[in-house]
Image: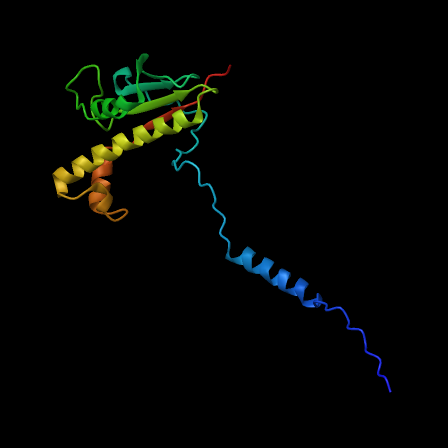
Length: 181
């Protein structure tokens, strides 16, 4: 008697669990993945002034005007300056203590005004803000080293020493609205 050989069936991969595995992997990667969020520029804005209140008078001597034009050129008190010397000029202006009649009377009176145009390159604006913040950081660090012998950054937030240095060199930065046009 001859037995008939059965033909082999084609091998198949079970697909029913493949969808489940793909779904679980999708959920896993969604849960594990962190998304980098841009935080922006960290500035503390002053409160909105009352419309009936006049702004306080500011002596021209105590105001350092910085303009960044559409070509990315920096003008300090209408004189061209490179971005490299901005920090030194701000430190000299703020830490004058009345010595030079063309510079601020005291660090408490010194105001740094930054003005741009609408076409100012964003990276130049950010570099300018970094230079201004760096100038104040260096002044505060220097005062902290002279008074307490430790860097300003080493103080805990809202400590007495930190507040004393911040009162000595308050950040008075005015970011002026760009001109229309």
